[in-house]
Length: 204
Length: 204
Image (cartoon, chains in turn brown, green):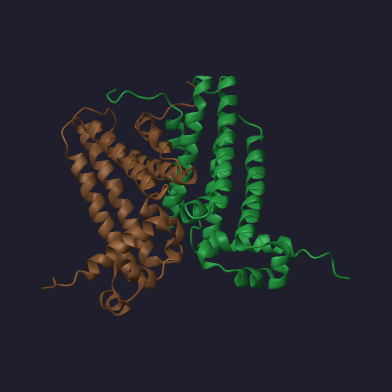
C-alpha cells in the first residue's frame, strides 16, 4: 500500500538541492516538480508560490544546520575547540559539495541573500532572522568562553566579535565560490582568533 | 548633427545600473536595450550575448572602482588613515545606493559572484581576477605600512591579513544587504585592525 504522500518533503528537498546549486531565479516550478517527482497540481496544493516553497526550504535548511551547529557546540572539549570544529565542519561541507558538483556551491543563505534579498522582502526578513540566530549562537559560545576563563575579553564585548566572525565566514565562503577553491576557508580559524583579540593600536 | 553613436557606452552603463540593483538572471537583453535607449540590432552589433555585456560591465565597474581605490590610497596621511578612508568611502557607497533605491544594493562583484559564478565560468574567472587585484591593492598598502614602521608585522605576513580584510568587507556588505542597513559596515575598521593584530593565544 502506498504511504501517505511525502510530496511536500520531496519538494522541499528538491528546493534545497536546486537552490543550493543554481541561481534562485533560474529555477522554475516545473523544474522543482520534475526534480521532486510531483505534479504541478501537488505543488500548488502544498505551496501557493515558488516564494512560499523558498521560505520552507530556508526554514528546513536552517533547522538542519542549526542542529549541526548546536551538536558541535555541545561536544566535549574547550569552547574554542568546539568553535574550531564548527568551522572545520563548515569547510568540509564546501569540500563535499565541490566533490559532488565540481563547484563550490557556497552558503544557501548567503547566495539567496545577495541574489534576492533586495527584491524579495519575505525572503530577506527570513534570512535576517537566520543570520541573527547564527550570530547569537557564536555570541553564546564566546560568552561561555569568557565566563569559563578560556577567553580573556570583557563579557559585554563579545557581540561585535561574533558578528565579525560570521561575516568573516560568509566572506571566505564567497572567496571559496569565486576561486572555486574550498581551501579559501582554511584561514577562518586564524582570522577568528585575531577577531577575538584586543583592538591593536595602529603602531605597536 | 548627431554625435558618433555612444550606444556601447549606454549599454554598459545600463548594465552597471541594472545588474547592481537586481539579479543578473532577472534582466534580459530587451530590458537592457530599453534602459539604454538602443535597439536590439545595436546590442548585437556591440555584444554577441548578455554574458559579453556582463564582462564589459564588470571591467568597466572595476576600472572605475580601482581608480577610486587608487586615488584614496594615494592621498596624504598615514597609510592606515588612507585604508580607513577607503573603507569609509565603501560604506558611503552603500548608504548612497540605499538613499537612491531604498535598498542596500551590495557589491556588484559579490552579487554576481554568489549568483552566477558556479554557472558561468567566464564571469567567475573575471571576478577571480578582480578579487585578486583588490587583495593585491590592500596587500601593497599593508606592506608599505610595514616598511614605513606604521604597522608592526612581519613583511612576509601581510598577504593573509589583506585576504582577511577583503573577506571581512564582503561579509559585512552581505550583512548590510541582508539587514538592509549600511551601518553593518561601521565595524569594518575596528575588525580590520584586529585582523592586522598578532594571532592571540586562546587564553590571554
